[in-house]
Length: 230
Image 1 (cartoon, rainbow, N blue to C red):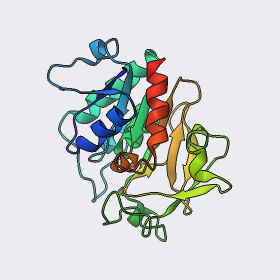
Image 2 (image 1 turned 90 degrees about the vertical axis):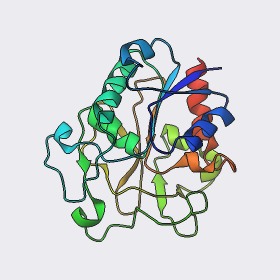
Image 3 (image 1 turned 30 degrees about the horizontal axis):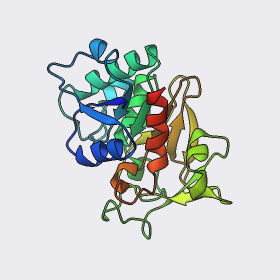
Image 4 (image 1 turned 45 degrees about the vertical axis):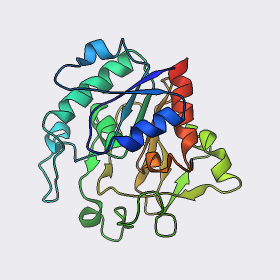
């Protein structure tokens, strides 16, 4: 059973359940004692979870008035984990803040506040039950040649889009090294990224972990665990 490292965050249970339901063993990390250099030799994959905003100084910008920091030390710890995971060619799955952190770790930049910086954009932070959002959430348009499309082909069928839950006010702007767009919202906001040079590197801006009971996006986790098993 592959061991999946999850850096600590405030809403762990859904991530842990999603990993277990897909055949993996979650290992929640302790930033005080789990050294990244040791971890990448002891685990089979890295999951980057949601949470507060990545420090804008890390991508060369001043903080927007809406900036809401993540836990102290979290950005630096996770960026080091990402860099070492890529060196070791570990599978990486990034969710919401995790996509943003992944992008910054690879040298990219972020839209700091979609609503104020891109007037006329869709509402990307919807106050609805996290696992029952489809009647209120927006669509994502998926690149048919992407890994996301391959994994979620059953959901796409003959279409090129599907509905997602949405709880983010930031998003990738300039993509980091090696990352390509796999899906966008109808307003152009990047909703999924990939790096095809690695065994598995996918980031999605929505929250598939919220559906561990019903399995709407379980194929993303199953693909991640399959790559980690190899």
